[in-house]
Length: 153
Image 1 (tube, rainbow, N blue to C red):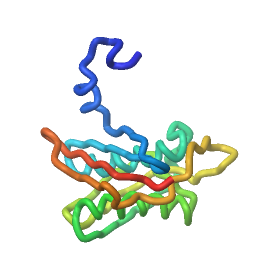
Image 2: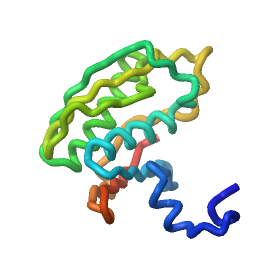
Image 3: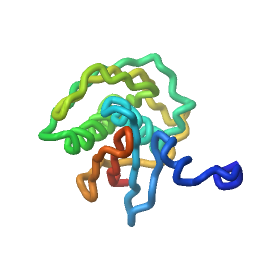
Image 4: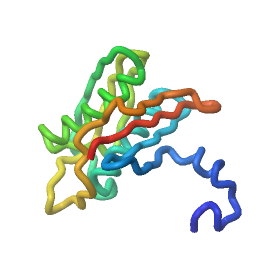
């Protein structure tokens, strides 16, 4: 049952969702929300992974600690998502859970617990090539943060 069928205000329901997608020409957009920048970045990672594979099939038996740096927080979001795609491309790793250890305007360090993606064991949804700077937005939204990023698929 969707929020409208329950008589719930769709705007209020959307504000509670940690992430959502929107169509964009040949690409796809990702909107992530969080109370803090750490939560926002973790939810953006969750949204990206969910676009690529059914996360219910991912176990938490592989670990990666990553540190990413960029010129500002918006560029950091793009670099962060592209680092996750790099881990998928080079190590076949996708995170099931992300714990942000440190984050500031220009860097993030996180522990990622996840799985090695195998085509016979995981249901792949789509290939995401990169997070882009096109129409990138990272703003304070009410009492938290919201980010919009276009993903090249």
